[in-house]
Length: 202
Length: 240
Image (tube, rainbow over all chains, first blue to last red; front, side, top):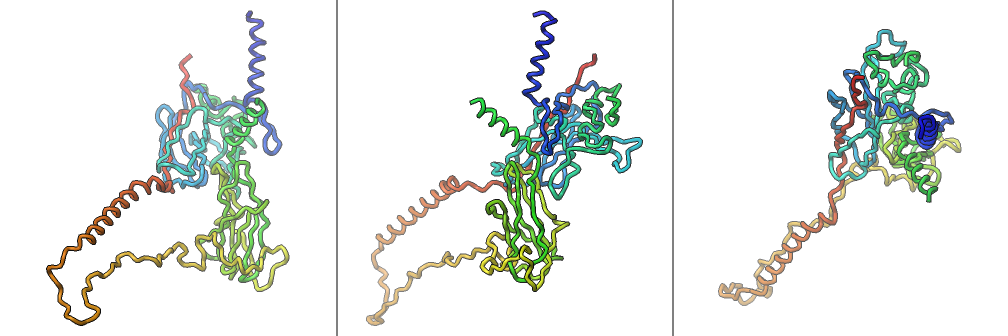
């Protein structure tokens, strides 16, 4: 196969894969259409941002659990006192507390900039032991449009918002400037890091 | 076959992506009549299934809420506030999870309960109060205000510790003297029966110790510690 014929062939295969997989537009619950991107899973970092923090949220529990983050970015921790009898969802937030020089009105400073999020269902209806091990993998990271702002929990509905309005209205918490490049990926371009808050600096 | 596989995959995908709590629809109850049962009706929907729908209520101003399980009745979930609790204005809220643990979704809340004005007059037709004296007791309510100790299960048949008195050697006739013959024969039959009974008893105890736990395993723990570990959200990229 020549190089000229290889390109359209690969393009066709990519389109087919795209149509069959998650990058096809998805119909939202309110009738909106949003693109499914496969970020930030597998983001390659030349210079990972320092001071990454991590917290775990358990459905039905009001406060998050702080996790330990290793120097290489892995997280671990023990989430104590989780009531059994019902299956739970554990959501991991990877974030930095970013000191903003000129935060917009109403934005807390330092700002909790979400870098990545993963979640996993945990079967706790009838646990066999009082310690349940949950190991997250790369496949548990959510896509850009699936990130939730777990800090903005609506006590009435029990729902977390999937958008933030601090920098761009209706942006994903994992991409606050809505330039389709995740916060993490923008920071990963360091030392020539792009601005995760500026949609014109992807 | 392919269709079945696709439907299965789609439904599994939908379930895996459900991070939303149930939706609760409820018309707040504005009025109720004193000492009459208040029936609370809500509609709860969730694509993963509704779990533990619960009505919490209290007399206005009280600190603790009582709970009553909402029972699915057709298209609605229904719970009642017993008449004995309807002595003054009532505060309540409704809460539910889904089967995946999302939630709780609420109408009202612990700090923002809905309020029912209780008066001597019967409420309008849709006021929510029902005149049903048979429903005054709430069997689902583990903290029934009328029952100070609902979990007590006294055992009237407790006869442990009592023994029969076999030491009486009195002569019922009272005549002919009451002397005891110290040369009396040893009652081997009785001793043998007692020994056999003891052996059977011991065997029963051993069987109980070994078999009953196998038949009735201990209940699952009520609280657990989740030990989590996760990968880095990035991979290190080598220098170009």
